[in-house]
Image (cartoon, rainbow over all chains, first blue to last red; front, top):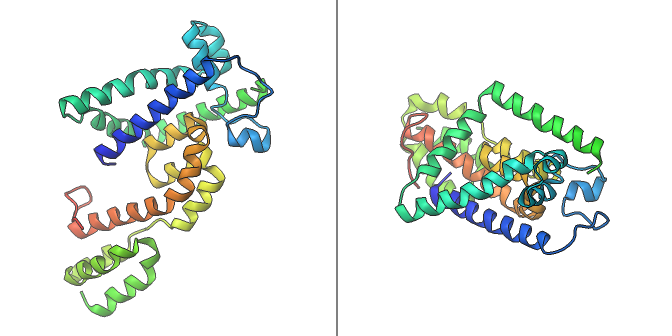
Length: 135
Length: 122
């Protein structure tokens, strides 16, 4: 993955994420609204990351336990939303590629067989939990 | 390499690459030493059509990106419900060019002679 491409993807994704969170935070959540998640809209079964927006909002309000109960992935997303844009911005200003190297390191770690099997199991467990909760 | 071999390779594998690189690829293969033919012949390319089907069915979970080897991007797609559904729709159109680009990178690695060395540029 080229540096400029990765950095622009991160920038767009972070901006979209912040815009989405700001929009959701500006109004009350209503469960009967149509979901943005395609899987949930079509099959009415939640996907592994359904509920992560609510989880991130709970983290913003300081309700960490509720956030964990809604979707633990919210913590991962919050950390990524906080760290990635700042890191990328510092990299661009300082003309370095430390984030690119970090990204490649993480990718090669995840490609190790037992790590990937463990992560798939975790995501699958979270998915089953999501379906049971009826997020 | 012999023109006959190269043309055979181009005929069987043309669908894996972008049209504008086909002539460049043919020239590079003609320049390549004959001893490298088995290596070139044994390359596995990803089929853009298969990736499109995977993207249509499992794009929301980022499975298409995992298949392509873009693990980081795949995780980003998985964690965000396919980028709130927008990214997965964009990828329905982007996944075929991305696959062909990936195949070209694989081919460039072979042409430059090393698995991890500097790649030949277009």
